[in-house]
Image 1: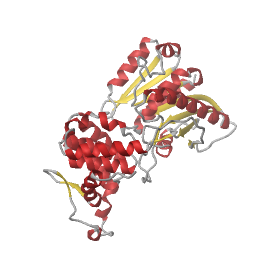
Image 2: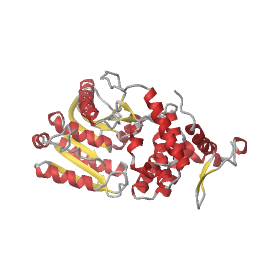
Image 3: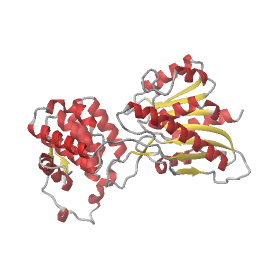
Image 4: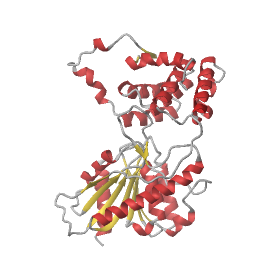
Length: 386
């Protein structure tokens, strides 16, 4: 079944955006005054979209939205879409902004383009408070009606367990010697990143006794069916909490298996697990539940998973039993994506269970600067020199 009627009508508004979107000083509007013939390929200004720092724009857009600055958030999301209009999660966020700005036509257009591009968290639309004020609007209600009809035409969805081969990149020391023993650091990237992006951290470690590995999350974080950008996740992004309980243990199993496979391939004497953002949450989970497999864990810019929910797979007993594990918690005080306070609460909880916790605040937003890795490396060197 094809999405049609109001969906097609509302999409017309968005087609204007595809050709040329810009933000005027006083209003967010769609502009169709320019076309491809007005673009000079030899003018360096035509390549200005290269300057878009998408992760930075996402963080600042989300921060603005969460603070009720919907117009400002829309500006950030539009800048992302101006260079990559099939970013379906950004399209959905832009729809939320337009809904909060009471623009039902634009909100509908963005929703439809998101779904046409591959956005599949359809159930989230129906109960999303951002769209509450548009209920009763003819255009928006007809759009939702068509989306529901299209969703029903797909039938039921179930999730099956499957085995697959997943890429992992390894950064070896310049003078690697297969007869020599090394310290292994396994790095888990954040949501929407990849092993290609995260393996660069390996260049920041200067100790010639360190091997840095960056396995890739097993789940795709690229919802768009046309996007060439490949992004990955350590978890299945669904609203069904029962699926979380099924999926998280499989992710932990995959991480442990990755550590074992890498350790059997190279001559390893010490193992550390490092994670950033979403990867930090799975570093906590994996390290605490399998504390005997690690000499320490490094959690950067992430949250210690909850233990008091119906879907939690980490228990207070798990945390208590792993208190011999060395833990380094690093978090930027200027992090707009995940509050610095989460690192303080994690430190407090682990300290209560008598962990050896190193808390390392830094400045740098939601990122992993080289200066931080230098400090982390000193902490690792101290532990491995004993």
